[in-house]
Length: 469
Picture 1 (cartoon, rainbow, N blue to C red):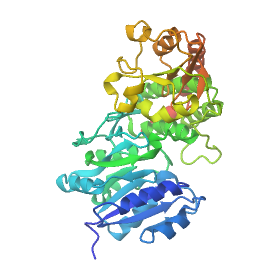
Picture 2: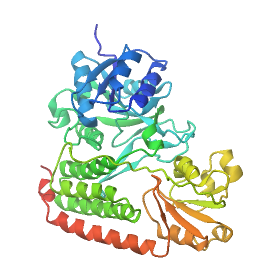
Picture 3: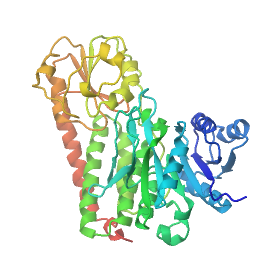
Picture 4: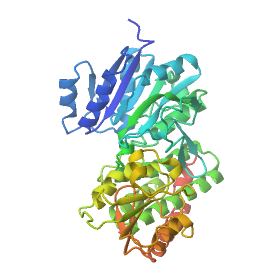
């Protein structure tokens, strides 16, 4: 029987037995069942293989002898199903669940758009209890070696249903047309995903090579999956290392203008210096070391898996529960940060007397509105002089500035201006430090030290010679 019109779902997993169980159950519940499921296990040690064999007998299991990363794992799965003649391959991360109709909507786009080589789902940040979009496809920022997530933080409720053309869609839910992969020339001589990435940017590179070969990359708003790593603030030092290192590797492969690459690499290193400074200010030296290693290896053109880098969790939970009441939490950056961090905030400070100051234009649940102090402010900005902020002056036992991965000077100044006996900064991952007048000065000094050293290393590195290689 020909499989040319049939879809193979390929799930790659490593030590996430509970998550992959939820993923597979969501696939079993899809109304469309004319597809087959394959799980590629990257040498898990948590019982994943045994669980899949026991609980999902219809799933075909491919077990690697070592951890090949996302790139290598997807390659194993894709080669297997392409050799069998499947016409479409649905790539899925192990920490996603698919909503009803997710696959049908993707296949509908493929049927309507014969020039589409890849189409991805709309991805919700799971764990918030609300439909916040992580991304509806994304765009490559060639000026900073970064990415711009399309619709990131948007509160959806199904309103965004269009199909849009983007630079790439992540492999946590990506439907690939098999015909787009025929012949090495279509992928510029690279077989499927480039294993040199191991983790992160491999799907970006894959999509970009398809675009260069003349295929469209689309994101479908009618196809929805929930991504738990995003909503749970998951991640380790490996996330930091591979995403930073591989962003520069990607640019060496696809940015052929030497001067443009130099500008881009410099801005990437400068941006990394700001984040490293925040980690140092927060006392997370193990995360600083991951960034140091990423820059060092990127400049030395190190590729593939790094064996001796131990994963360190980005998220922490405070061992101390704060018993004092009247804690005011100022939410910097986009309002969806509140929803993702709220459980950690309330575990640390207690839920009874915590109030939140967020952008009131984006408040989405009535429970929050009933017991939160709210005011509107420009996105990602506070003003210490604003009447709204001055209304909170006095009476607060504690003020907590909640941000993702940056210290905004005006937000820090606004938090300190309230004059609470205790003022803290809490990042997206639960790390906390006291905020004082010296905090910004210390952070700026750390950033300048990293920036000066890393840009000097960049100018003397082998990386510039690798452009276009």
